[in-house]
Length: 279
Image: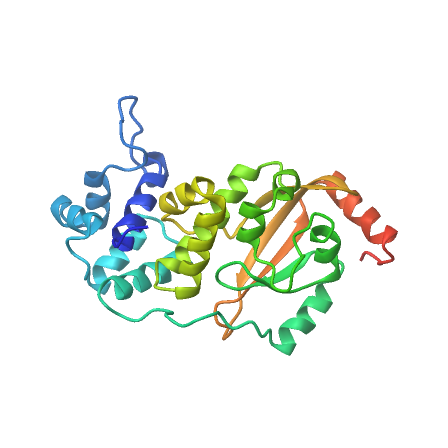
């Protein structure tokens, strides 16, 4: 990770958007992934020279109007727009999340919400992927693969340092990309704990982590389908939704749902075998 997180984020988002998605022709002779700088500049109403300065880190103080125009042109989500503004603050000398460990306390109302979500697998995580609280349904899912071992389990630490993760996640490469992006997103804002975690994972996992960390300037996905291989329930396809909790030091609630009938039946069978009553 370099010192130009704002430029890296803009470039990563530009390269991830297809011309067709913004109404431009997708010609056969394109050598640039996603949008060209000239195309994004036109969509945002800025000059190519100015966009180049932003991406190269030679200008780190775009106005709120420029950020809004870039957000519209890049089709940024609400979370990505907030992240963009925070990157500007961090790159221009502002203070962003420089404290120590994120708050680990989970509010009683959030714990009550987890109880209401049973028997669905659901978990509360902090901004670097540390697991703070979870349902019994999540424990049935994650416990047997080894994810919940230790006093403070962390998703990225399990994925990159525990050999069992390769068996637990059949699409390990994609999961690893997402977890590295999660750590990078926090570290890019000056989060000291995230940077320490990145140093730890670099030391233990080496290039498997560092290469992904350096390349993952965009935010991780907050919704999608994750495939798990459970030692008792077999192959599972789990759709997940991730929701940020209010006033909670950037804690998120992640809920997993069966993405197909086979997975629904397997989760119900697992719940019955362990004495739970699926709803």
